[in-house]
Length: 184
View 1 (tube, one colour):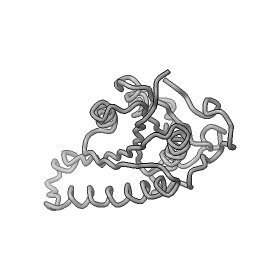
View 2 (cartoon, rainbow, N blue to C red):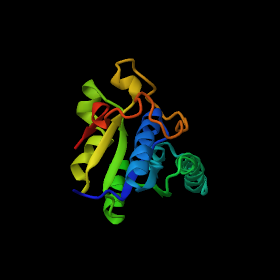
View 3 (cartoon, helix red, strand yellow):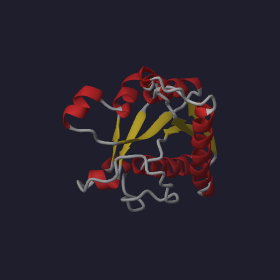
View 4 (cartoon, rainbow, N blue to C red):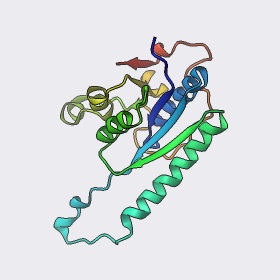
C-alpha cells in the first residue's frame, strides 16, 4: 500500500475548494500527512492589449500579493485544525501548475474540488479537474461540493469563503469518502 505523506490541494477560493480543503484536512490528520496549498492567479494581459489599455506596472505584483494574503488565511484554517501546511502561488494555467507542482514536490495525492461543468461549456472547455487527472503523475481525488452533489446547485464563482474548520460539510464523521468523492 502506498503511504500518503504529502497532499497537494489546489484552491481557487470558491466553496468547491473549501469542500476539497475540508476533505484534505481530514485525510492529512488521519494519515499524518502534510498539506501543500496551491493557488493560481493567472492574469491574461493579452486580453486587454487590443484596446490600447496599459496595466499599471505593479498590477501583477498586487494580484500576487492579494492572492498570497487569501491563501495565508486558508492555510491558517488548516493549521488551526492541527495540520502542517505549506503555501505556493503560481501565475500558470491551473492544470499545468497543479501537475508540475505535484511532480516537483513529489506529492502522493492531489485533492481538489470540481465545479461540475455541464453541456456545451463542458464539451468546449473541459475542466481543470479533468485536465489535472489526465496530466498528473500521482492520484487525484476530486471532491464535489455537497450542494452540487445533492442537486441543489451551489455557488459557482470564487466567493472568498473560508473553509469551515476540519469537518467536511455534507459528510458526517465516519462516512466513507467514496460516497462523496471520485477517485482517478
